[in-house]
Amino acid sequence: MWTCVGRLERMVNRIARIGAVVVGAGRAVALMAAGGAGIGAAAPPVKDQVKTLPNFVFILADDQAWNGLSVRMIAGDNASKSRTTHTPNTQKLADRGVIFSQAYAAHPKCECSRASIICGRTTTSLNATSKSVRTWAAPVADSLANSLKRLRPEYHAAHFGKWQWSQTPASMGYDLSDGITQNEDGDSKDPDDPKQSFGITKRAHAFMEQQVKEGHPFYMQLSYYAVHQKPQALAETLKKYEGAGAADAKGAADGKGAKGLKGGADRAVNAAMAEDLDTCVGAVLKDLEELGIAKNTYVIYMSDNGGRTEILKGGKGNLWEGGIRVPFIVIGPGIAAGKVSTVRGTGMDLLPT
Image (cartoon, rainbow, N blue to C red; front, side, top):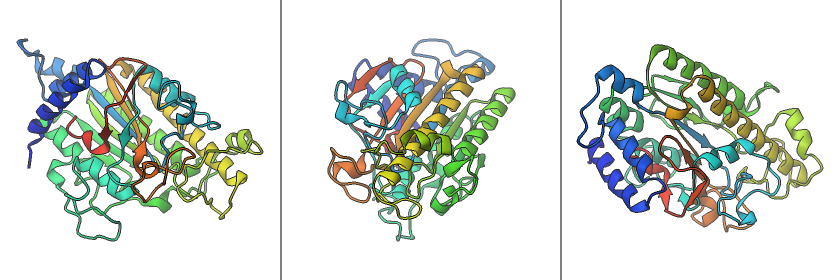
């Protein structure tokens, strides 16, 4: 099995082939995570190194289609964005960073894809090929959070939202989490916190605020329950979409809502749910600015798997493009703004990066 440092070195070489769009950022992440100050440069004092270590915020949407945002995944191609769902904050992300237009999930279902992300390995190597398989081979010590903290013990890690597998977040390196959560934990009874999206965001704010206060760099994963089936949305958000058709807002995998509704009403609540998620993305970005750490923080946005669209064949649960092609946006120090990359990537690339 590769060591994490070896994986970092391999990823630097991989990014070098991508080109000028992200090469600087890739080298910065690898060097800073390994504690390097640059080739030929004298290492700064440890205290100063900690101040310059980057933070990482990974936002993982649930079942969001490749074109489920109002962000064009392909420049100039209106079919590569939602026709009705309004997501201005993810548009801000895209404007500030790189859109990977050919990003893919490692598996067309939630739990298997998430395992691949956290472990940085293929689902087959983890034996995580089906929800019914109970013998997943999770390399706990080499999980994303554990690997990062082993390289630089100064890091603290948190996971909020949907977890959906048997290994505990604590064993995988997360100092703070919501525990072992499942799909049903996202079904909120609070009309002011549909899909638990706003609660997750509040916990994220508290965690980041504490890390800044204590001087810790951090890795934080926000695994939102939106836009999974049984859609929920704020009443005021839903009003924007009711009666509008919401023609392509089919982020929920099976096209059925909490009450088994079909057609325009259900598509409307799915679109509203996606906008609520986008509002939370905006809140996280605002927090980063107000805490004074935006310029030293990488934000990664993607979905765990695809959803049904009008332009890609298939959807969640199968290996057609609709099931595995996902939105993927990255911003952070050293990353060029407003770029679109056609380099293929998957969720399991995050750990070695």
